[in-house]
Image (tube, rainbow, N blue to C red; front, side):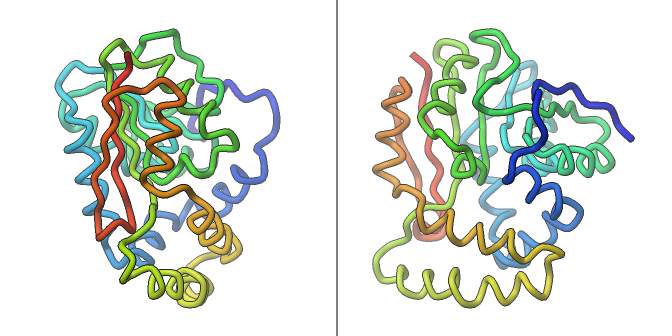
Length: 231
């Protein structure tokens, strides 16, 4: 079994255990449930991060490393970090060229100003204290360093009713067919519906000290990219 550095002193919390349970088929199921849109969203994330050769990038909630791989392909030193050891084990089996670390986003094991950029895809809403996590991300970013968040958000009004129906009725049924742990996707629905909208997330980033905050809607706002810079 691959070895991982770890800063976690306790057993996996409930969310980490849930992701451990779905790790093996996680990327496949996500691709199916998003109708392939997740690939386009991740491409937009890389474009927003704008990695360059030699830069250090921390990719949080990286899971199996699917989001980290294209960052590293630019020549940047990209580190895949996640609280779920199960996800990292699957990732290391697939992408042995990547650096993986098992850690908590609320207590990152890095010195201040260690990274040119921090990214997090579809994981911020799973962290218990959003502002504390954003503050920790700012701590490890260099002055002028950037944060890019790719996360589910609030779509345009004409689509909201249909989107809610998809999340509450269709997605759970698809998850029962495709996933080994359908309950994990019930949590997914709840976490998306409870998540702040674009303006609210920008305000949380500002509370954590990020500057020059902007966002871009993807797929009419079903997903949004937020970017900010460390002061």
